[in-house]
Image (cartoon, rainbow, N blue to C red; front, side):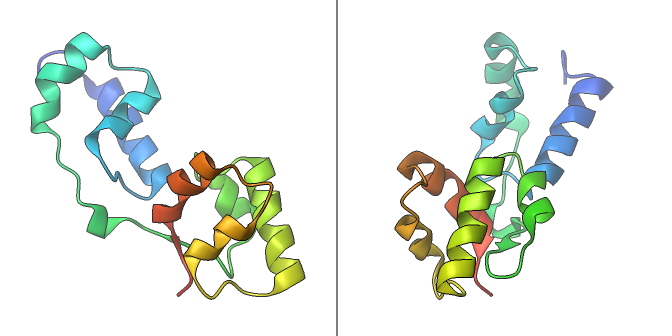
Length: 117
C-alpha cells in the first residue's frame, strides 16, 4: 500500500500484539503514526476479527499482565487487583462496574479484553 512502509507496519503489528487484537479498524489511529489523509484511503484494506481477541483472565492475571495492555493504567490495574483481593473472584466481567474508582469510559474500553474463564 502506498504510504505504508515497513516501519509503520511493524508499529501496527506491535500495537495489535499488545492489545491482544483489534476490535475495530479505528484503533490503528490510536498510534498517531498514520495521518488521517493516509488512513482513509488505506483503511479499506484493513480487516479485524474481534473473535480472535486474546483476553486477559480477570481473576488470575497479575499486575504485569494487566499493565502490558495499553488500556490498563497502573491506577486501573491497582483498582482491579484491590477489588479482587477484597471481594474475591469476579463471577462476571460486567462486575468491574462495581469498582467505584473505575471510570465508566475506561470500563467500557477494557471490558472486551477481559474474561472470567
